[in-house]
Length: 302
Image 1 (tube, rainbow, N blue to C red):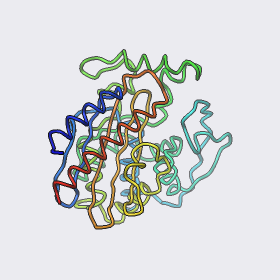
Image 2 (cartoon, rainbow, N blue to C red):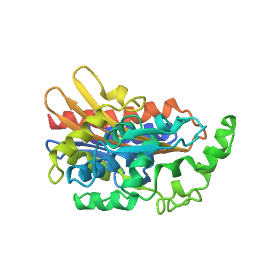
Image 3 (spheres, rainbow, N blue to C red):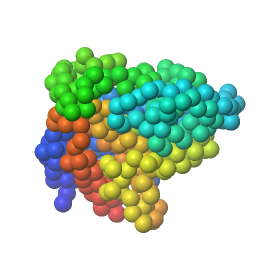
Image 4 (cartoon, one colour):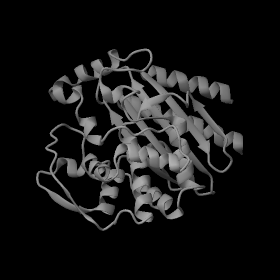
């Protein structure tokens, strides 16, 4: 089809689905890549759970944290749809630190992530990334902040009102009265920054091999597979990923490992201008665009 035509069609597909996006696919063997606005910065939402896992495991490797240490997690009393795991518990639970990593990364458990953030605050996670030579991702707040938005102030049948506020209140410079959607106050990253992180996880240069391997395992166990996974998982390919969702934001980062040894990192960060919480067409468009860029890059690379 040709690179230029693929990119035009990809942009049109996102636009028709009501999406603005930052998408990047990189061949991790060659470094070749193909993307749409890959340096556009977005609030990261739950994608920050991957950097959190990296830095927590690095601290375990260096002997600063005990993976078996019991951690008391108190119930969050979260009643809104969405949060999973300990976030929905009604009673205190004691969980080993390493098991919190599984809950946080594989099932996107916000309460588990915040228990880890209590040990390694957001600013230290950012510092840990810089120590590994990774720039472009900034972690600014705990996950609990993601359940303190206008969405929690409306009844479920009024969720479109929170979506409308998220869409209509953004400024041209990507500022926003909702702090979690303001790139100057939220945890942020671009498609390129997250692909750089995935590149280091799958082909470590500065990261400890055991740390990288464990994060890959956790991402391989990801149970949220409604977004990009249908277009990348097969009997001949393994898809390991992490999603991020907040109001009108829908993200996913992941790596597809083909049976022939090819490895591609994928990051798709999007925001919707459609005031609806459930948007299967947006999920399908994201997957189609990411897959089309992957297929063209694979074709060009031979």
